[in-house]
Length: 458
Image (cartoon, rainbow, N blue to C red; front, side):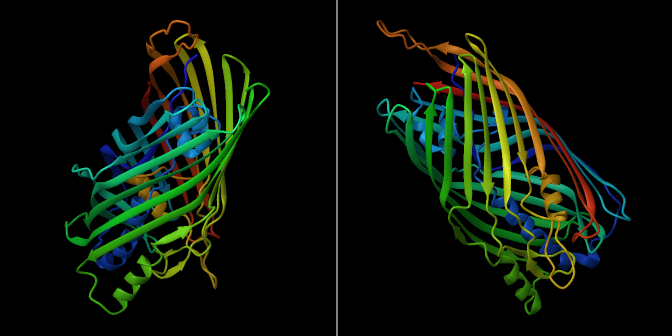
């Protein structure tokens, strides 16, 4: 039976391809200063992407899964992996549609298609003993600069649509990962792990029609995370339980912003307010709990929930009144599931499901206003930088054993040294904000993508 592979921690990534937009044409000239304060939080969202794993063909499950990728989310898995190995998977081609409709305005539609180019950290585990698995790597600064340019991005400001151009460059300054899992007995294990990534970036924002530069932003971002986990197997391995939690999360950011729109006084005060709170350290903000059922040697069911605790003190700049306000955040619980069917000695069939709720609520106006879901999230999806939450994803594919490990005389340990995988994912979101929200509107998102990956056991 094949051993699966599905884990890659995305440091940063974006889609490079063709895009088109249809929207009512409106000049940006009269609102240039306001647009600058929209672009800043959008840029911050793009560069502070989560280090969450990517295991799409199995719905991103990782709580109880014998693969190096899953050990990054629950390091206790490293103690149960049989062979040393490395693995990684990534999205290939994609076709993406993003749409929005606001009361009284023409519908907005964005089409993104082409090649997705993520930079991902692989999962690596070395078996120092049958019970001890350790892993990790260090990536030095990469001289390659990743660049993405998006033109005619729509922004809704004060109830009116506008166009913007954005050109973003990013370079990896370094990345590292550490995993250690140990089985205290045949059926129970614990683990610790962590990861680190640092990038620097440059962004140039300009008006779509005139090409006039609105702002140039240079900055750097550091993300770090520490995790502990545990796993227990019951009923001769037919039932498995796993859990993990982040004991520490840290982010540090530096921004250097130049713009002809910032000349001091109230503008500088607004800029200071918009960039405050970028450096944070939090504890126990995420928890993972999962179950694995294996009714027979050919079939495996996996499911899990992931709880994320939001920061109630989070603030942003409202595009309704252009003031710093609290964000309408909420704790969320994501659901993920995957199925593996060993259809032939060298073939596994895979299917997955994922439901990812949005931590941003609808917001509200009035005496106690809250920044809510709206243009910021739509702009990120339109630029191809993130899905439009709240979304669900379904996936299907297969794993193929390509190279079998040499048979050792007197050993019954037969396994595949090289495994490849491929498949398709379908992601969709449909969101409505009624008149009680900060920005009433309807949003739609759809993506079809190819996924490929490989695993090498040694």
